[in-house]
Image 1 (cartoon, rainbow over the protein chains, first blue to last red):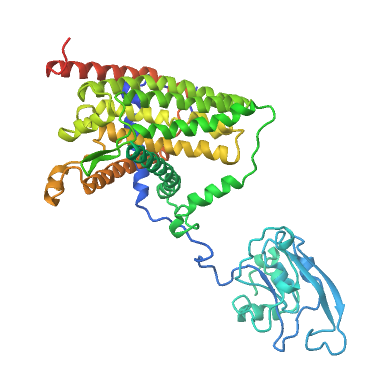
Image 2: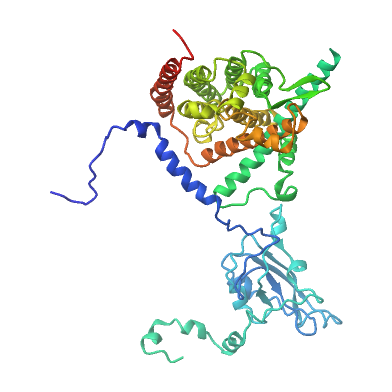
Length: 201
Length: 351
């Protein structure tokens, strides 16, 4: 009785002289490799050439300043809580008199560090941020020789005044509209009960 | 006499530098060629298109830490790579690189020495070459290195026999001379030896692959089974010598194949070309053109060596022995018998 269809009849065929010489098979193989000589390699010479990335690519983070140049981050810690990789750490500071042009709110991040080796670039920090302060950008995190160099502090994360970083691709009108909604609307979207009753949203 | 010594010294230096330079750029070309076969681009950072890569590799090798295992036999450990390197370089001394040049009535052979047993010299030095591997592997006091060395020597012994028999057939059909210069001159007048010895060429070529420890016969240094084979314990420039000598071996065996079977510095319609250009016998131009032809042939064979390496998987040890003793040896004997019969009926040899 046949139980499976995996039965194979073993063949112990004796090799012919041509097969033992291997030459016909070798010729066949060499034609295959030679055909690859004339193919164009798909190589991208990375630092000189870059391959196109999506407009909403999630790369190295930026801590945005507002239009007056004050840091938006208020060190609430929502991003650190949201972070599934626990890559974000920060300490808070209190704004002194005369620092209004530096920090938008009375509380600010004295230090703000993201471990780029822990970060999984999921974008949950960006989603959690109530102050529109942190964004992921289409920049790639550079290679480093030391592990400690991958811990990015405020010096690398906060955008430079003369080199503002455009995040409109990630913060499109639709995203802004979505964020206006109070409550956990994006959780409701995936509520099984509501979906079954017919999508009201 | 002084002029003779100076001329020989210049020849030695030139051939030595040619071997080293060719081997250095063979390493680059190997990587480039492998890349082309695998749809990659190969080394391209050092210099224009990677042209300074051999220099960078050399500097890297010299900068590496030199480790001599304290359980090894120190003097033999150092002797191994030196011997391997020396034997691979001195094979180049009997190869005629170009046509003789006549300056002021004196003929200068473009060959370091034209000994009348050149073919036997080649075979002999090639067999000494394996001593470098054997001594290196043995002195390492490491089982992987020893296994690699044992494989290298058994492979060398097995493949030298069909190689020698193929050469005997070649010598019979090319007029009975053991001097490489005369073999090449014979091909200048008539056809290249490959026309009379196609099977012999095939056998010789396969054996040359095995003698140079190139894939698919690179069992002595197979990384997957033997870590690194006979050079497991070697580091720094001693490892570099082993790797470098392999490329010199490849260059020399390509030169030998080109000389023995493909007419060396001769090429079809050479005399017609020289007559058209109005070049007299013994002029420097003829010599240079012939040298170019030989280098082109050598380059072709180096490409073939590499093409084979990046196509074929490594032979298993028993397959290697089966191929050597059960296929190549009978084939080479058959080739010898056919050659002898043909030459007998052509009246070139008498019993």
